[in-house]
Length: 599
Image 1 (cartoon, rainbow, N blue to C red):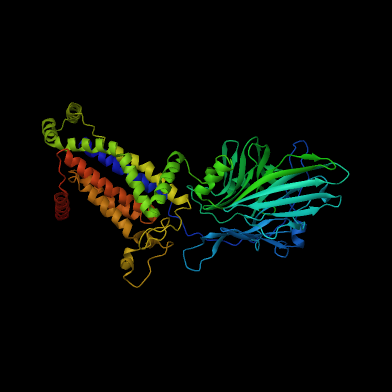
Image 2: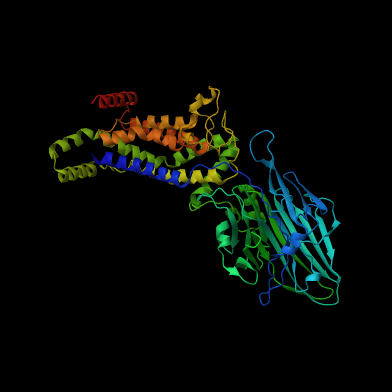
């Protein structure tokens, strides 16, 4: 086997092994199922920490939760209404515990339900705010019923103000406002009209009762995500439970000191809730797990303040609760100064590729108005950028073809002397300025781009339920057509994703990918080595089955990439005086296959 064949075999084998390993490590995404949460605990406050200047996070009062299981449902509620959100908050504790995303649905079926981020009926996921103090009777707690002092419903144009007065005359106010997207602004105020100084520390908490169902992919982070003065914090639900146990708080706890910028919250694949501290301010954040009641928490803890008689104080915190739309998140990062807020999206280790790839894909989508065509346009842009490298590669391959007669002469002269053969081959390559490994470079560069695009299509909500043309209604899902029922002509449904037959249930685009990959091979004559012939013959069809259950957007990218690569290679080789005999190579390959069967 000559050096050219060795290099081509190495490149194709490497590509196959990488994709096979990727498929085994990161199998196709299972159907998302929402499991009902049944834990219904209430949250109450604990004493203020001494010596730290910050409030202790709230703890669970099991006696209180036994007395009243569903306290939010029977309390007065304040509607939350925007063009993108619908929900309500409870005047018992002032909890934001009901949020429905009006632009997003569980499935693409006609009567599908909206995505519900918070559901107060289950009381399993909510945001709650308050104050900690040694004087617990003179601060509101999560069971305090607040008065609605201002406003009737929370809308972008009408904030609401909750108010409660303690037995000693300390007035607490909580003003809540919301923008047109997913950002709440929470202002907590206190007016000390008592005769004594009171020490208070404000807090904000996101509580999640029991861990939700997760996809469980290594490629996707689900759990707590935070930003600690320049360092990204990512904790899975198992990581949270493995934190060091704190005896005082009776929970597994990690505290982060923030000196300038910080945010923390829970992230799912497409949705998140995040507490954001006032930029350029000092506070603490905490990730916490209370094993007794199976509660996960993300906290923001503001410094302790001494408020004298007749004095007042205010603390502002932000809450993002909604869909992880990249451009919306980027707007908050730029306009509200939420540092690196874009990293709430899991860009992965190849962030230096995934971020620009998404930006380019998003730009293309705005140009053409369809995410499927945007993927094809992105492919064209990528292939154009790599064209200089591809040109050198295909020119080198063309020169190798022109050198075939001379290489055959060297093989005859060298005979069985492998050392002499290698020396004369290298001398020929050097003389003609040909790099036999040049054909591998475009393939090797395509691997990280392919993986990065796979990551982008998997984690970004912009691709979720995005249609292309025809039967492709969700580019983040596999091609729904199936060869097993002749693409809908036969009167039965293809195998479900749980069936082992699904690997054979390939659709139109995976088949097109296999065909275009096979045609691309036919630009060159079949290798003379029998082992290499077999690998090349099977590779397009193995890839077709391997990628058959990947997202249709990714397979469409591969089809477009194959077609553009075919055109580039054909015209570049023709410009170098090497005219590819496609039909002759196809007939030759069939003859060789027939001859091998006869033998």
